Image (cartoon, rainbow, N blue to C red; front, side, top):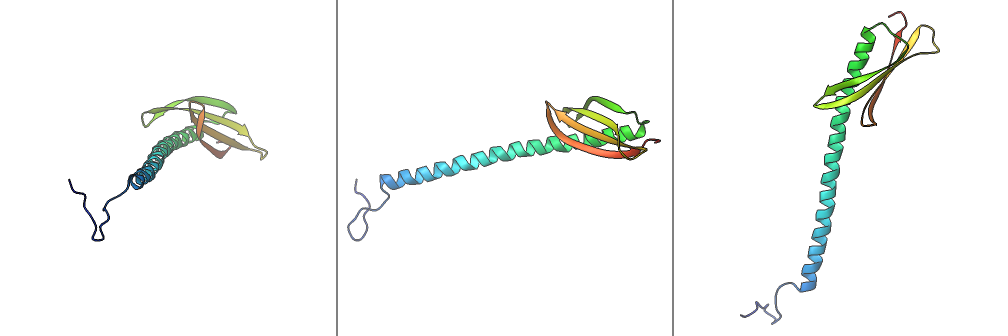
Length: 124
């Protein structure tokens, strides 16, 4: 079989070194893109958890403000978005007379996603 030739008599095409260099560059680019995609999925998953945890925290603040305030800590579990989250509500006195601080934290497997704070009067 006859090789294609240029007009000046030299063979046309790529050398083996050129092909290997192109493959090396392509493989490095693919590895970088796949890592970026994996990180993007993990980041999206974390943001989804934070969003649902925010809903749980807001719910607990609303429940705490609806009840008569009691100094201390209350905890429990709530389901949101098909996941179960642990919440903790701490009610503490502040230096300001008659003012209480509510601290709500929402976690899952020891990973705290959201912390919220609110204040209300002691007579509420």
